[in-house]
Image (cartoon, rainbow, N blue to C red):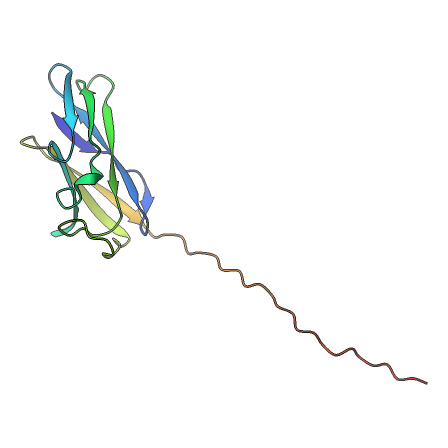
Length: 144
């Protein structure tokens, strides 16, 4: 069985959904997907950024039919917060910066796949300042 990430173009600074495509070289089979059967991690060079072993809830628990590679592939969505992970998936960790990353994914005991993707720079928010006009004294016209 093969698990291969299929990341889409995305930007940093927010949650990222990464499809994991499941295929088999043999006959179609059923897989009970969970953090106990599928694992994924995100790296940048030798830096481990995030792991489903830290954040098991990122792998949806579901039962899927996995088909051979020449038929329709089955995909599940990995929910990455866009942040670094720590044991126990504590919140408040640093956001992953714009740049190149790798998603390494596999079923436990299976062959791993490694797919590179990029996080772009998040768009800068547009701040519009509301004008607050100040009253002025009326101009007096001379009489006469």
